[in-house]
Length: 281
Image (cartoon, rainbow, N blue to C red):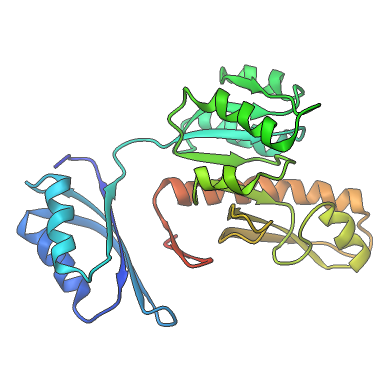
């Protein structure tokens, strides 16, 4: 095994003795556990475990096979963490989320490789070019949604994409497109979900007279803005905030929440449990 930390992820039906069984397999192969997190969801009776480890004298394939033999049927066992995920960012006009991710990527703080930026508008090309990241302009004017998505898939074809990131990409993706990347598309929504779904959430928040505004990063599913939530945060506002001032405050929250959520995803800290997530932060 490699000397850098690898990440073991286990997701299976719960039963007594799972931690002992898993660490027993690792111990027999001389593995040194650095960190370990586990959780049992009582409602679904499922067990989740994330383990960082080094050393050992077995291949990953052998470890996964032996672990599967001591776990309940249907267990999911993976070992990763040995490479940076490859990411393509989708954006439209707003620069704040894209700029935050490009800056972190340039300084090695993102935990992933941004291979390209896709946009239906050309306005963000100059920003993207400053960071020497390919900008793929795919206009949507005059195209149906299906035709536009086929054009996007054509420009994505040369890339081995692990995750797509919707950094204020103001287009609704079709179910067929989403199913090509199951639970591999992360979106930032400019609201503290489940409140104020859809368009113009800051106008909705202003009209409702809210006292906090927030942002939500979530996996994209065919149900608009209802995918499993990865990270959220809020900031206080009061009666003196206009809708545009709420939007300015919200943009700061959005870029931080998106960056935090992506860090969790890229470090394999997020498990799916139905439409909920288990996050080992």
